[in-house]
Length: 196
Image (cartoon, rainbow, N blue to C red; front, side, top):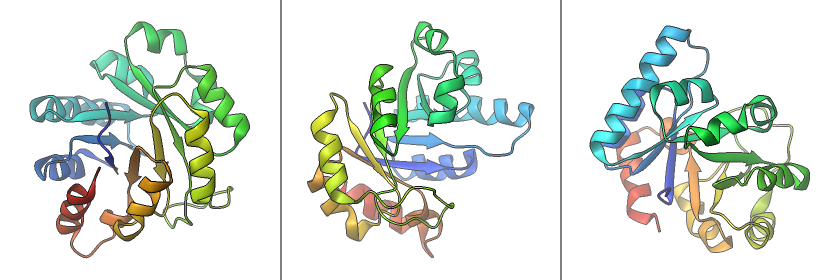
């Protein structure tokens, strides 16, 4: 089960740092890595998380996750369409899926996602998004429609967290709020202190 504070990190350097501070779940979202480096980082992340009692979610790379023995994978909609879902399920991997509209939500529910992520809740600076901010009302609507945990992502800060939890989020996924903070360790500790 995911912890209610769900940091997303770009590499195992960040992963070690966050797990060392007490995070109980983390997503490894590697971009632009060669195959050897990708496999090395995923393997290292699995070892670190297993040794610290932390839930690891591997973003996108479902083949490597299966090969290396991960237990949880996160897929965006494009990756979901291309993935071998029977192979993922045969391997026993749990599955999280990103959603941004009702059609995508239906796709996530059709594959029995173990969690559904909705975003961006607020405007986000991490990447250009083709979706407008979803807002707290949409978050509450999604909560009423799904049978699994709801993950909120996008533009969420420590200061906004209580409202996001109150609107129905079981879990808050966070990237920019700690990665760009002038004191990331303190910011992570603040998140851990308020997580529900």
